[in-house]
Length: 393
Image 1 (cartoon, helix red, strand yellow):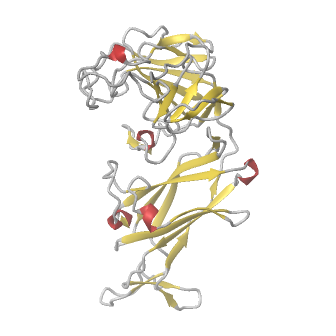
Image 2: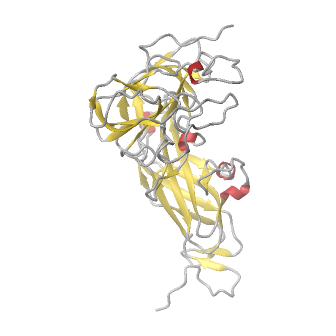
Image 3: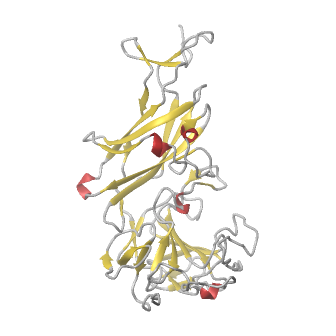
């Protein structure tokens, strides 16, 4: 029996005939729809594309469609794919968008972040279909069913089912407001970063998380202008009580990591070396049903609970601080599927209720939101606290 090599013809010939594009596509993350503070439904997940061929491939277009209707839901063209935050070939991103970023070299993998934004509930698809197009290559030719050759390098991957599960519903992790959601859901934010955490598994564990900073109506974290030397106590949110967001069981506690001294120019100056053990500072996880809720960067000595303890919704469990990999006092908050802050798959969540005050700066009229997720730069008021600071004219 004659078995054709994957690239078909003998090495001496200039053009290789291929029966299929030698890529492997794997979906990472369970795409559970979640409603953002703007009312739209977001479906976010990662796709890993590996080039198993002996030639480099340059991704030209990725189209995501609804299998049932055939309608395209999003389309990433060459400009989108040159954005290194959209298509990553290394863990650490050089933010410059150039054509070279679309190149997936032989034996290399790339990670694509897909974000679907849907305006209506009845538009949520049950199955997604992905089409991948690559730049034409004069040394490659696709064999068609009729035996002819084509220079169009297009292929489709196996369908992806959209989960029917709902986001986890939680109550407020903090009182009052304004709390600004830093690095909220979005492909460019710090929480979209992918991690390798000890078990040789690539994840984006913090995808739906927020860094909650107490803010005034202008979105500032401390009075402006501020001096050349600043302290933790200058920040509006420093020492705020952190609350259990549901009835649950304390699954993990790390305490005793000293706080950082904030720097007026912005860089992080950690009080201890940055390791897997210190990166999150003092932190707590709560097991709520099958999910784990993570609170990080707490004040040392402020944690009032112990592992194995049952807690009630609204119970004070610690205070907001500036420990670990933190540039200033804030509460890092996200939800995962296992008891590992940076080693779990992300789980979308929504808050039962909050006031939405705008994005960046507070508007004069706050709007009530229910069962929604604060998005990037949202100002939210959870109620039950003092009035948010106002900027003096």
